[in-house]
Image (tube, rainbow, N blue to C red; front, side):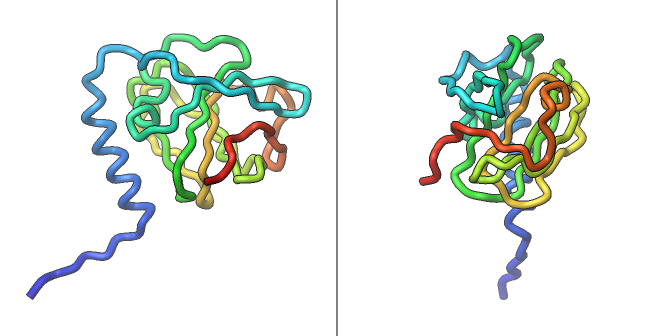
Length: 154
């Protein structure tokens, strides 16, 4: 007799992400610069590093002490799912926007540095953009605003 445990798909994704993050946690510094893309938010231009691999998404902006003005990190996932982020080993206060495929901002969360609180998307998404905390508010961007320049869906 075998016991089959059925867990929600988003729970498994979060669990795997946390396990991978703990294995990367011993890293002593930030990851090397990633390829960048230009995003638009109304009249604002964003230079976003592209975190497209499991490792680059897990490391994210860990250990970074600063970010340049209008620079951030765009997390690109292969599939829509509930995406969850935390700030372990990240000394910068950041805001994260969870973004629909059409560029619409679904939600924005402010995240506390060096904190394990999970910040999860309300609905399945493929994109999340981390910027300096308060960037979205200072630029007048809120839920419902649209970003341009996101990578095309596969």
